[in-house]
Image (cartoon, rainbow, N blue to C red; front, side, top):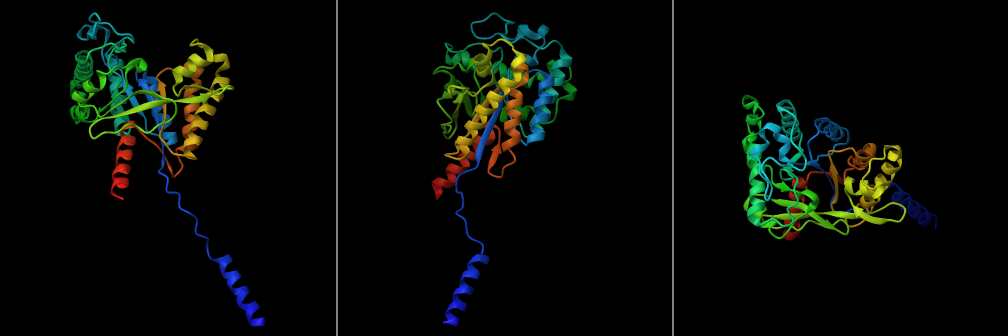
Amino acid sequence: MFKLYKLTAIVFLSALLVPQTQAKDTRPEQLVIVSFDGAHDNDLWQKSRDIARRTGARFTYFLSCTFLMTKDQRWSYKAPAQKAGRSNVGFARDEAEVQRRLDHIWQARNEGHEIASHACGHFDGGDWSERQWRSELSAFSKTMEDAWSNAGVADREPEGWQAFVREDVTGFRAPYLSTNGNLNPALKKSGYAYDASGVSRGPVQPRTGLAFSTFDLPLIPEGPGNRRVIAMDYNMFVRHSGGIENAAKSGVYEERAYQAFRRAFDRQYRGPRRPLQIGMHFVEMNGGAYWRAVERLLSDVCGREDVSCITYAGALDTIKARSRVDGGA
């Protein structure tokens, strides 16, 4: 009997000492995609890049190309169905402003961020023909190619700029998120890899193809009533203050935005792990409430081993790589 007790004790003690094997989480890493539309204000270029350094995030910048033109150069641009020299978002004040913006674009690219297209003059293309869409896309490409020369610093154009414009600028978001059936054919023929102008009820996987994919910004629950709103600063700005600046309640709006972003993240992180997309602008609405909310989210989650705060192009590569692995399994 003593031997039996002794053997039982040894087995029990061994079980305590041997590490227990835990079930491995086979879910993919959670992707978080934060983008900025417009990408004009040079101080906010610097601020966004500083946020990226602090949090480890990488951003997609959807650039409006008229910010690479001075007012004197505006006559070279003619949007579909508009008079020459018109832009809904204006132009750069002078060449010095453009030069500083070009430096930010190139530095951001070298830091792992993505530069994508937000067209040029921020016009609503909802009724444009395919030919008109292609005209606007061509104006964007031409403006990017000639940007350093037009800014009076052709000798400062970085080596590799032209290849970058041709090969790396492959994403698009339509102004006002306004699209029609002619946009995607125009994007495909113009060499783009994806469009990020869609909207969905919640986070969804992008629709990926061999040569072209589409992303949807999600509607997420927000505020005391958990009413859904597009996960974008402007839409929260309209929800919170009717689109009228109210810096006095900036802290309240920041907390509401942060909680909405965080709940949307947690739901995916603990569940299906569909990519979470958040759209921002180069405007600090309601006293910077939404910029602070996004930085808080990124600070909280980007350092996790199973979270990747990534560009649209990077997310697309990751998702396609997963599909190849799953398809070959």
